Length: 250
Ligand code: PEP
Image (cartoon, rainbow, N blue to C red; front, side):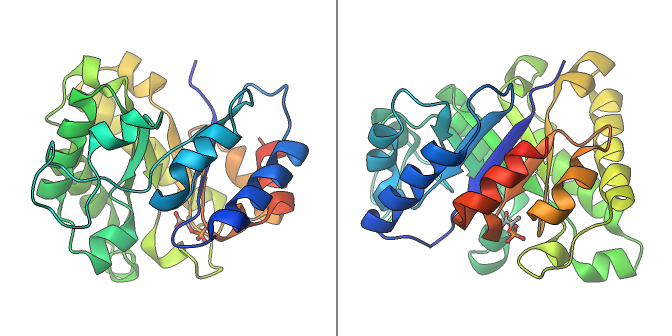
C-alpha cells in the first residue's frame, strides 16, 4: 500500500506572524483521523517556528529547497544538517521554479538528492514538462529524462525515501489543471518506468503526487485516479479552508 500525502508549498509567502495564524487555522480545520500525511513547507525563516508550533499535531514540516554541500562558503544557502537540526527531515527538490529561475539542472538536483538521502531525509522530487513539450508531444521524453537523470542512479533502498510530484509546468499557478486523464497517463507512465528500472514492488510502493492548480473543486476527481496518491499544492495551500478541503478530498 502507498502513503497518500497532501503537501502545501507556501513558496515565498507569509511572514512569521502570518505563518503562525495560518498554522493555527490549519490545526483547527485539518482533519485529524485521516491516514493521509499532511505536510506544509513554509519559508526557511519560519521553519523552526513552524516545527515548534505544530508539535503534537499530525502536520509535518518540509523545506522548499536545500544546498547539496555539507556546509561551507555558500552565502545565503541552507544545508541538510541545518534542516535536520531544527527537526525538518523532508525537503522538496526540483520544483519547476527552482529549475527555471535558479537554473537547477537534473545533474545538480541529483547531487541534492544524494545529500538529502545521505542524511536520511525524505525527498519530494518534482518533475514535469513545459507547455512546449506537451505541444511537441515530447512530454513523456522530458519526464523520462528527469527521472533518469535525477533519480535512477539511486538504489532500491534509497527509493524508500523518495516521493515524486508530477507537476506540469503549464499548470502551476496558472489556474490550468491537467485533466484527471492527463494526470493519470503520466502517473502510470512514471510507475511503469520505475518498474522497468527497478521492479513492480518499488513502483507500486512509491507515492506519486500531482501538482498544478489543484483546488477544492477539482481535487476529488484528480485524487480518484488510480495512480495519483495525493497532491503538492501551491496557491490553495495558503488558505486553511481550501487546503483542508483538498485534504478531505482524498
Ligand atoms: C506548486 O507550486 O507546486 C503548485 C502546484 O502551485 P499551484 O497549486 O499554485 O499551481
